[in-house]
Every structure is written in structure tokens, then in C-alpha cells.
Amino acid sequence: MWSQVYDPFGNMFLSAAVAAIPVFVLLGSIALFEIKAHYAAILGLIAALCVATLGFGMPAEMAAKAAGLGAAFGLMPIGWIILNVIFLYNLTNEKGDFERLQVSIRNISDDRRIQLLFIAFSLGAFFEGAAGFGTPVAVTAAMLIGLGFSPLAASGLSLIANTAPVAFGALGTPVIALAAVTGLDLLEITAQVGRQLTPFCILVPFWLIWAFVGFRKMFEVWPPILVAGVSFAIPQFLISNYHGPWLVNVVAAICSMSALALFLKFWQPANPMTEMPDHHAAEGHAAAAVAPAGKGSGGGNARVWAPWIILSLFVFAWGIPQVKEVLNGCPTPLKAEETRSAGTEAACSLTKRGFAKFPIAGLNEQVQKVPPVVPKPEAEKAVYTFNILSATGTSIFLAAIVSAFVLGYGILDIIRLYGRTLWMVRYSLLTIAAMLAIGYVTRYSGTDATMGLLLANTGFLYPFFGTMIGWLGVALTGSDTASNVLFGGLQKVSAEQLGLSPVLMAAANSSGGVMGKMIDAQSIVVASTATKWYGHEGSILRFVFFHSVALACLVGLVVMAQAYL
Image (cartoon, rainbow, N blue to C red):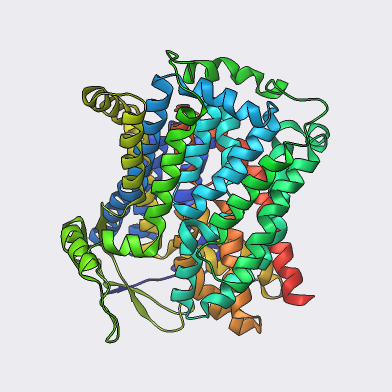
């Protein structure tokens, strides 16, 4: 067994600076040198392996296995989601249905700001609540491109919108994981996260439109922005504080979409903005090249919306815990007083082959996390879970197949288009595999904990910097769930040492983390893939970086106020 070392150089600043080298290599390559994302990810992975083995003393074989485990997780489930979302997009685009979708959405409003609000914030929150793991950015960015938004606007704005709902994504998975690793009460953490994020559920829609068109044009449509935000924030607060984490986003998003659509029947902007703003005009030709109008064929609103309604139904069904349990072959043993129906048992016996766990020999329980990251030494598990049937990507794949038949495709056409989609996203899949490999190497080597410990030594300012630890965790791992698992124990231990509420700081890890979602390399690649704007990841990162840092700092100030006021 190898124990992690968090300060190998005897100076926390120097150790943290070395630990951060892979982050600087990855993000610097993309943002500053505009190296293609898959090359940047490979460079970042090489840097991570060197830092882990040469700087922090991790055995080379363990580091290589951690990278392999991360790459596997990058392809399944995350790459599987992206591949099938782009496949669904291609199916609709080939038939010209995106052009009719644009007309359909214009029936709600032909104003670009309101279209963005409805799709990126309200609809995106639904997909985050039902599935998470990159699904909302992939879907909303593809839809915005189809509506004629520029690739930069579609990518960057989808990332900004996908923030406030992230803590309760995938039916509450990040908060549930946080409660599991900290041992704190699930409902207390859920309520605290809900309180921290409620103001941001109102702020983010305003911030989104401001980032798109500036303050003056944002103010022209403040009533629907307020309706969308408040109708999301109130259900989010009530459900998180009085029910639990499971349905927070799903119910809040449905309320937001319904309230916004109803409000727009009685209110429309005095000066509708039907064209892209000037500062996005340079991207207009790229948008036209990415999203051609298609062949054009018959079909009304029902057909235009059918693929996205089918997608919503499949994704939501796959997110239901009982459905997921059956699709996983019912791996959770029953308690003594519980029984399963004969039908459920039969279904489980059929699905068992689609679920398997593979402990990684030489890595599983061979890396030991030690204090102060955890209260007492504990071995890190390294198990790859293969769950093809219950994976969100599978629900999207099945939704795409059903949609293909609804749209009138033949079997050979479906196979041809799927092959074309696979070829289209090949570099994106490689990039995501490499980026997740970086995240897993930093996790198992303890370099991410080193960066977190530096922020944890900030005394009175810890509520602010503890929030930034969550932001850092998501920026590194691409997942609020992974950040909570990574830093949840550290937040609890640090809070207890400083006399702060462990629930407050554990929740701050998740709430701060949501603002890191827009700059994590994985999400940026998802956005560039969904908009088919390959090779421009640096432009997307530069577009969203300020917004990510500014919003994370605001969350930190809210947590400071909770801690001391």
C-alpha cells in the first residue's frame, strides 16, 4: 500500500505549485497557445504522470492504472452520452427539422434573449436534474446552434446556464455522494445547499442574458428573466428544504418552463431582438456552416418536438432510482423485511449481464488517503463499473433510435448516420478520455488534495476559500459529484478544527463547485463537440473564465455571510 504525501517539498506553497503544473499545462495549452484540445489533454496527462511519480512519489504502475481507469470512465459513461446526443442532433438536422424547430420556438418568442433563456436555463436545468454528466450542455448547445446561434454563443452560454442546477443534478447525485463521504445528514446538507443556491437561481438567468447582449439589452427583458429565475428558485428552495435532493431540479425546471411560456402569452418585448448581437456577428458564417437548414420535409410542431420529448421521457425514466436498480441487475442486496415482485426478479435476471464491477488490481485499496484530508487513514477504492444498460447515454441512444423511426429513417440510413457521427466525434472522445485520466491521476496521487489543503489553511477566510476548494475540485474533475467525494472529508475536518459548521462547509463545497462546471475541460469539449466547433476550445474557455471565477467568489461571500452573520 502507498500512502499519499501532501507536502513532499516541505513547503505547502511549493508543493501546491508543483501539484498545479498539469492544470496550467492543460488550460494554458488550450487558452493561451490554442493547441487542439486532444493534444492539450495528452500534454496535461504527461505532466500529471510526471508530477505524480517524480514529485509526489506515486509508484509509476499505480499512476498508469489510475490514468487507465480515468480514461475508461471518460469513454463510458461520459463519451457515450456525447456520442448519442450528437447522433440525435444529426438525425433531426439531416431532415431539416431544426429549421422548423426554430419556427416553433418563435411561436413562444422570436426574441433571441428569450429563446436562450428558455433553452439554456429552463430546459437545460431539466436535463441536468434528470441526467447530469454533460447531457444538458450537449443538448442545449446543439439546440442553440440549430436556432442559428453562433458556435461561441451556443457553447459559452450553455456552460454559464448550466451552473445553479448542478448541485442537484442526476436526481441529486452530488449531494447524496457528499452525505455518504462525510457521514453528515443528507437532508441537512440538501437544505443548506438549497439555501446557498437560491439567490443564484435568480441571478444566473440575468447573468446569462447580460453575458450575451450586455446590461442595457438585458434590462429590456427583465420581466421574463425574473419569472424564469423566481419560478425556478422557489420550488428549488422548498423541495430542497422540505423534501430532499431527488426531484429538486426536475420539478423546478418544469415550473420554470411552464411559468415562462405562460408569461410570454401575455408579454413580449417592445424591441424584439431577432438577430445575433454585433459582437457575435463574426461567428455567423461558422454557425451557418455548422447548422445547414437541411433538406426540408413535411411535418408540424408535433414532429419537430417529438425527438426532444422522447429524449426527455427516456432520460427521466432512466434517472428513476428503481428503474436504474433493475437495469443494473438489482446489485443491491435486500434487507430482511424487503421482497421483490416476481416480475422485478425476472427483469433483474435479464439485465445482470449489463452490469459488472472490475476492481483494478494493484490500485484498488492500495492507495491510502491520510489526515488531514480524512479524519483517519482510509484506502481509496479503484473499481470500474460497467453499466451499459443503466447508463444515461443508453437512454439517449434508445431515444435517438425511436426518434429516427418517427422521423422516417430506414435501418441502413440509421447505421450510416451513426457511423458518420462516431467519426465526427472521434477526437472529442479521445480528449475526454485523456482529461478524465488527468483527473484520476491527480485524485489517486493526492495532488488535488495538496491544492485544497493550501486553501484550507486560511483561518478566518476559510468559508470563502473553502467554497473555492469546491470550485477547484469541479474544475479539475469535471464533476460536482467527484469534487464532493474528493474534498467532502477535508471540508468536514477543516470546519471542525476552525469551529465552523461541518454542514455549512460541506454544502459550500457543492455550491461553490457548480461555478467551476463551466471551465472544466470536459464540459468545454462537450460544448465544442455539440456545436461542431472543434479546435476552438481556447476561445470557449476565455469566454467563460471570468464568469466562472466571479460567480464562485459571490458564492464564497454568501457562505462567509452564513458563517459569521
